[in-house]
Length: 418
Image (cartoon, rainbow, N blue to C red; front, top):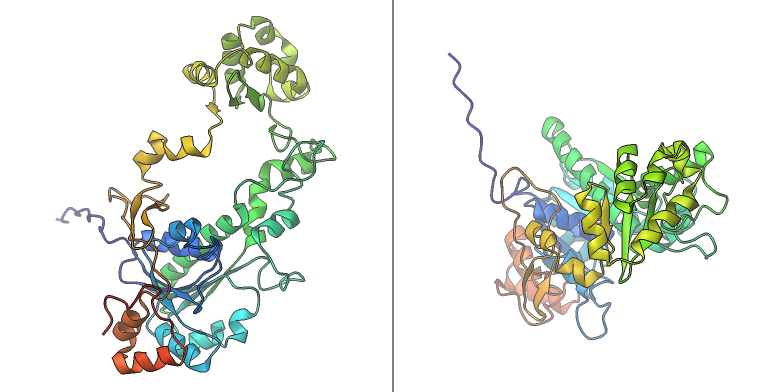
């Protein structure tokens, strides 16, 4: 008789516990990928140049908040990879690592002598996760890219804003973070495949490629012929294929309203006190309402204008109509659901005091989300990482430090300094 299977308890250390990730991430893309892996339990070592990565010192006299939020839970080392000894140190670390993350411009890793072929030659199990603006192939591969320029080249800016206004960037760094999420996904798939084959591989993500699927509604409108020539529809549906779908003014704010189904429309008409609209055959289905979009929006706006946003949202939610107040950032930070899900927890940073960082959107079974330590100071763990991973001792580390190959911790020696 077969014994009943016992259900394994989720690890409190995370599913990636024991894996070493070397992160050459900068700005948002690579660091967010590294943060997700750290939340999943990986030991993420952030490798920075001696002066720190660009986001660290974005603020004039202190470490910038985005850096603190995106690099929580990581160890930090500072190495000059442009020197031969620095490159050799990194390759020695790569021999013991599972994953390397980088989001440099095309060709930088090869110029540093750290391309995939080199990394794979010292560690055939190593996975290189690489993200760039436009990828490693194609005519645009060498173009410099930042979130703003990728938004411009993917059409995101063309479809954002109002018809009579210039193109507008999305209010969030959509290209950077979509790139980081997809890179994390690719790395996890490569780890799974390595478990079968024993070999690592190059995982590549283009920010442009990662953004294109977010244009589903807009491209649908283009291919179906419903998208107007200017493409920008304000807060209306990206493909101009749904109505009502808009943000409506209230006496003290704004409310977003979206009727996904015809049943939602009937419920909305009851809330508006407009049985005449509910009975009209030319408004009975979504495609028909799209043809009367201005009239539909005027009816909803006429009802919301005289009411407070909270009241409007409450009445619509009681009628099971998708709707929400438009919140400001201070309201989001204090939101009960955000707090309950642990998306902006806090910890104590050695120089900044109490700071917030990004929790993980990923939940694994019944395990509680991992609490991460603060982002590392520049070079904080250089000596302890090189000592524990490579066996280097104090005099050797002193020599590397004196030669400008590795950096000092910005507020003194690493507590674990040998």
